[in-house]
Image 1 (tube, each protein chain N blue to C red):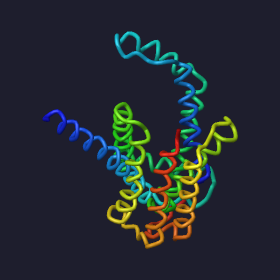
Image 2: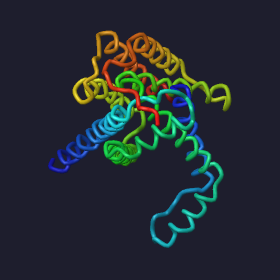
Image 3: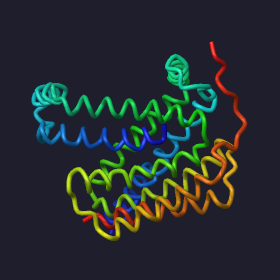
Image 4: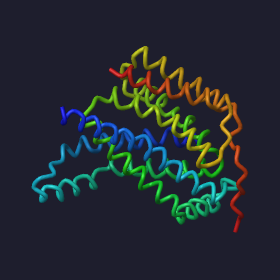
Length: 132
Length: 130
């Protein structure tokens, strides 16, 4: 009885870390690159400058750390469950990502972008269910 | 650049996967076994091709995010699922199930819908040159 609820708690934490740390990390990288600003051209010197400035942003490193954490949580989940169970859960990341875009990055996600995000999340789930 | 992302990302993972299969299963205990495994890993060409692809992926990712919304880039980068299936089907002759093709079609439809929204809805500056 007690062991069962512990296992459930472990799964809840594991999947929350995968979804939240994963998208959280990408959102942090996004914020870093928002601060740096867009590369004005494909000139290699310009690209190098933007990349180096990005690497100098604390947000970027916070993002990379969170993504690493999510990656290890994913490995952990995959050692317990099948891919076909784990990846549909991670499709929730697309929903979390759009929400993060709105609240953390102040992006304006309109109706059509929401529709697209939902379609992608459904598609990813189907792709993984169809593996086999 | 998004094309570079969705090709280099999966490619890097495929290379890493192939490399680690060539290296073989790593035993973590006793700890003295880890060093030769690490040496073998870093002596493997596939591993370095994988790391190279992933670095290119990350640079492309940073650049794309400097231009466009995250809520635009994230769904768009899911085209990688389609790329993986196509690579597997045409290059490796893998079987791709009908359900999977349906999923890929739904992803492409979703990306198409997202692609018709404005890529950038925040007003941040361009990096000043120099």
